[in-house]
Length: 91
Image (tube, rainbow, N blue to C red):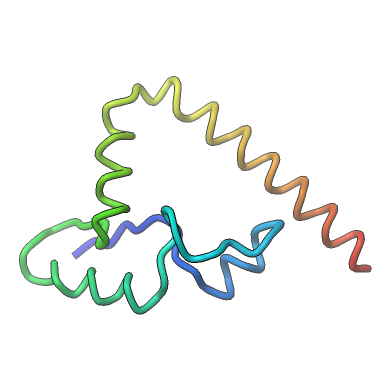
């Protein structure tokens, strides 16, 4: 089974985002993510696990990638710049 979740509250996520992302909205806890993924085990070839992640991906699949990809790219750049500034400030 392919598991394709969105944001999950982990140490890795916190290390790679400029600010700690709280659980809520589209970010879910590890326990919730794993529990919801196991519900799909043996039933689906590919899952997003949690209903919030599945809903978000369903909505995003209706939007043309020519609109989504530039937005994702600019958001990633903003996040990388903020993370770099955070690391420079810490040193």
